[in-house]
Image 1 (cartoon, rainbow, N blue to C red):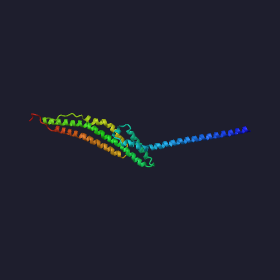
Image 2: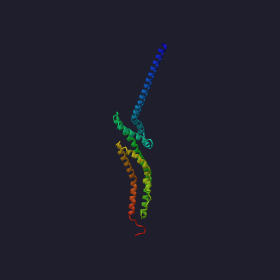
Image 3: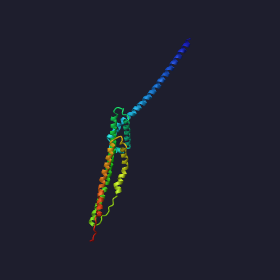
Image 4: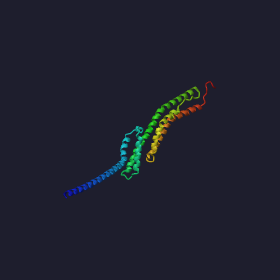
Length: 238
């Protein structure tokens, strides 16, 4: 009977150990599920916070940036990320200071788009500084030819002027990249009211530079037309 009693106790211990092991396994499974849920929750929170973290990250880039940043391959990516941030806070106004962050994101977006405006103006100025000396040379040649014709009392000779290459080709070469950059401003007009002002500023700058460049050429052409319209006496006539 002592052996049977010990066997019974061993059986009871086995059942107890088996039950405890099952309970431990169940608790481990529960802990693993809770861990996975917490990780998913943490990832979701981190994903939401990442939008707000961009304010400091991109702000640090834009605050010390020059127009050279526009040529950086990452520049448009920064603007796209700001678009996502603006859109996110716009539909999640329940978050604390969401409106404040929205204003800050739009201000940072305006800073980035303002770099495009500065780059646009800089490229136009540089192109004009390259073209202007050639235009002045042509004007001087045209005036010299007109003066010679007056002295010789003959109709003024035409001075060749490569208008296509001087007045248009240079700007066409830089025009397509600038057009693409201006499109980045244009497509954000619905989310940032400053975009309209920026586009108007670029338009005004372009017209002013072209007027500066073309005005002397137009005046030279008009002077040449007036000279051609004035009757000239030929030597020995009378």
